[in-house]
Structures are given as C-alpha cells and as structure tokens.
Length: 95
Length: 188
Image (cartoon, rainbow over all chains, first blue to last red; front, top):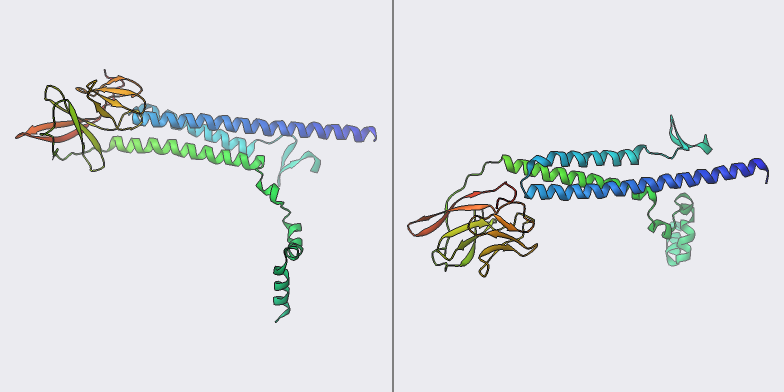
C-alpha cells in the first residue's frame, strides 16, 4: 500500500472513531437530560399536591429548556466531518 | 385460468417461490429480519427526543391544571352526613363531600367532638385512616400522620395539612358545609 493510501486509511479510521464518540456523547447527553426532566416532572407533581404554586412556572420553564436542548442536540449537532451545504449535511468524503 | 392466476398459485404454493418472486423487491428494500429488530442510534436519539417532549408536556399539563384549579372558586352545598349521630366516640366513618367522588373521613374523638377531613393524603393522595390506638389519622403508604383535631402533619412526608371539611351540628344532625384546603407547609 502506498504512503498516500495508508495516510488516507488512517485518516478515515480517526474520522470514524471521532464520529462514534460524538454519537456516544449525544446519547449520553440526551439520557441525562431525560433523567433531569423526569426529576422535574416528579417535582411538579409534588408541588401541585402540596399547592406550592409559586415553583410551578420555574419547573415548567426548566423542562422546556431541557426539551429545547434535546431538540438542538438531535436536529443540529453533527460530527465535525459533516459540513452543511445547500442540499443538507454531507460527509467530507462525498464533497 | 389466466397466466397471472397460474403464476400466483405457483408462487404461493412454495415458500422458496415466494422468496424468488420477492427477490426484486429485496433489492429495493434490502432489510434483513435480524437487522429490522435492531434499534439504530438515530432511532434511539429520536425516541429520547419524543420522551423529552412527553415529559415537558406532562409537566406543563400538571402545572396548567393546578393553575386552573387554583383560580376556580368553589361553592359548597351543605349536606347531611348520614349515620354520623350514631358514631361511637374514638371511631370514624367515611362519607363523600362535596362531590360523590370526593372521599372524606369523619372522626368522633373520645370527648365526643366531630372532625372531618378530605381522605386524600397530601403527599401522594393515598387514603388516610383513623388509628384508634394512637388517636391520629395515618397514611399507610409512606407512614405519614396527621393530628386529628387540626389535620396538621405530625410526622412523615406529607407537605401540608389535610383538607378540612367544615361541619355543623343542626338539630342533632351533623352537616358538612364547606371544604378548606391548607397551603402552608408543615403547619404543626
């Protein structure tokens, strides 16, 4: 195998490992946010039963912020090797 | 019999023929059964996104319902509590007030006075009961207890006193005339 081909293969392996890490990070963050939202929901139910209405708005806002972060992670987070073009996100390999 | 019918019958007669007949479609939809059962990372991400949306809607729904309930001014109609007069001291009975689905508990203490409360524990809405031995209202779910005279929390996880039901004795008959929700945390 030529030097150039070896470099290309190593580069591709690094890129794939990086993409896997990004995917793992996304999944871990999403799971953590879901757990936080579950806690917020439990706190909301507690507050409703205790008639502590003053804390309800902060709890709902907090849950909404968590949802927006989740949405941004799913919709807009992409591995760095994917670039945005006029036709969407594409890998470097295909450009 | 037309050629098409013959072909259909021939294809359906043998599983291998079916596979051969669907081979062109397999090229267009190359799904293996085992792979179909797997969940991809993208699908799992989308599932987490939907879960997040559901949790947000749930929290918002609870808060909205609580806000609506807080603004609603309830008017109560007085209702007699059947059988209250025959209640022995240091015992209790259940009744429904203000609506048929609102369970309440009437307690006659040892000195003969009546006290009535909504039966839902203020922690997680388990029904409370009157403990004769300890002369207090107890919640069996998470071991909370309430003072029978005031409804205040004695111990345990409940965050506030029981909802008090106002009662009056009219011509020897016990009437429920209103319901009052407490809001203070641990009023005891």
